Amino acid sequence: MNTGYLFTLINLAVFLDTVLYGIIVPVIPYYATSVGASTTELGLIFAALSAGLLLASVPAGLACDRYGYRPVMVLGMAGLTISTLIFIISRSVWLLVISRLLQGIAAAATWSAGLALVAVLYPPRLRGQKMGIVMTSTGLGTIIGPVLGGTLYQFAGYAFPFLVTAGAGALLTLLIWFSPLPKNGTPAGREQLPWQQFLFDRNIFWGVSITVTGSFGFGMLEPLLPIDLQKRFGLGSAGVGLLFGALSLSFALFQPLFGILSDRLGRKPLIVAGLLSTAATVPWLVVAPNVTLVTAAMALLGLTTGAYSTPALPLLAESMEKIHPKHPADGKTDRASGLYGTTYGIANTAYSVGLLAGPLAGTFLAQRWDVLTVMLLYSALLGATAIGALARLQETLKAKKILP
Figure 1 (cartoon, rainbow, N blue to C red):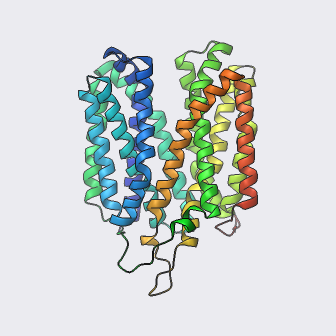
Figure 2: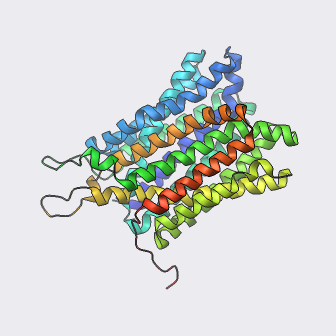
Figure 3: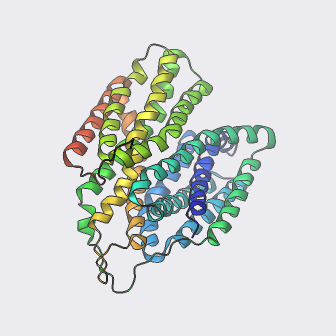
């Protein structure tokens, strides 16, 4: 089994998923309006992806653990390809909604199987680094997608960016199908892990809580910050896009570093430090007196969020391993047949819950008070999560010296 090759395929899969997510941002608003979509219907089109991710993440994770990684990963890539082709032929709002829903379902399969495979392919001492690289692929896709989509749409027409993505998706589907992925599926006679023990494990609980808190913040910033920046500095869509690009670029660049540090120092110190530093950074987004300082705050936010989000991913896998029942034959935990799919299916569900709740809660609170108050409340939530993690989270790795 060529571990490096399989890891490359996983990175390409999540990269393509986020590229498609980004391509849609500059393209669909114009196209959907041209087929008669109202503002409410446009919001429904964008929300459909999160709904698909929310509905399908746990089933996709369970399928990984029951039937193996290959069918779930293949279905994820095939679903991504099909959903992309549906975009091309969509001539109604509801067909666009269906294609976005299918995209979310496909993303649930790709992410649940992809993260689970990273946990299977690499031992704990390397997982932070490898998860960091996966998150870098995600960040790069988020940056490249809108630029690629807007450029190809403007110069080659509506269909072309989706044809490019669909072609890449079809090729990846074939490569994954013919790749020697690790086998999984529950062997006959293997004792099953009680759901109560899994769901109420304190590390799993706090890992999921950290994921919800992080995605809640991103979901909240997307509708609130552009309006605030337009009011304070007169920034248009291009300027706002560059600011969010600074956040994504910073996030992408530092993920491998935080992964390596978490492998060396342990998961808990970086998670707590990342949550606290993010809490200190968030209010500056709305009190910074000029665009330069807002840009610096956005870049810093990308860095600090990576400090807690990347170590949380391997921590979930290692926490599952600590509560997984031992193999009855040899008394050892079999890493290839652990509940990694279920673990990351739950994590993906948590991410989608935060992404759905963030815009709703943020806009509601901003109408009652103001944006600064909302940011301060979010800082308090981050601080409370940090305190809970500090008090209750159990370290899964022993700290190592960075230098020999």
